[in-house]
Length: 290
Image 1 (cartoon, rainbow, N blue to C red):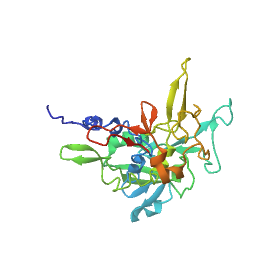
Image 2 (cartoon, one colour; image 1 turned 90 degrees about the vertical axis):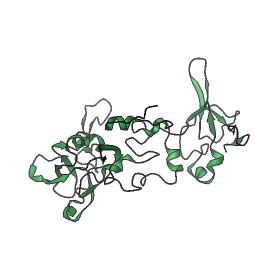
Image 3 (cartoon, helix red, strand yellow; image 1 turned 135 degrees about the vertical axis):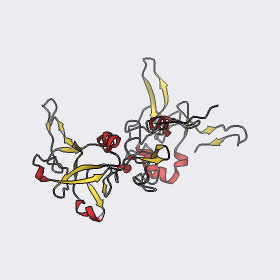
């Protein structure tokens, strides 16, 4: 078979090696935009501008090199003419007209746009170049709107780092080392693993564990089943899905998972609990999933 040699970045990003599951692709990973079970993708944006360190999910300057140290605590409002904040609009009560929504911690009623979307076009055209960055004139604890008076802005020319590492023949489908140091993509995840494992369910975001199990189809097209985290999943248990509530003693708790996850979790085969799973030839005749 002829060896596949992707020639451009898009082809490299979309190429799935034999044996790799769909989740290995950026487009289908649980954490393709926000923190998930594999890594927190947002952390790649913290050092996207040379000389300063941004908050991974906000336009707030956390740290900076000595020459930009006085930018710490300021907010980046606009890059190369493109705004990073937008008004928060919506109704105050059902049926009312939308207005700009403010709170005591967001008196100007604005919100920061996620880094991936805000910088996508600039990274395509300006990576490796200096861009005009407009900050709040003073430190800003709360979200800040873009002032109409340009004198109320502080302007700096900062280099926009390339997102992808470079190889001998051009960009590689690998995050540039300057953006994330070893361990930074996972440092914000819940530890131990049981925290996120229990928290992430189908109604929250894509979960890598079962949720609605032991499902039986009804005559009218409806179904009945139970929550995979219910302690009583025996055949005699009522076929009633218990909504997730960390205080409900009918459900496996965080402490249960910390102390004895092996006894609390079951394999699922075709949507049903399996206490005994037959292994392939060469292994033990059976093994308990508990």
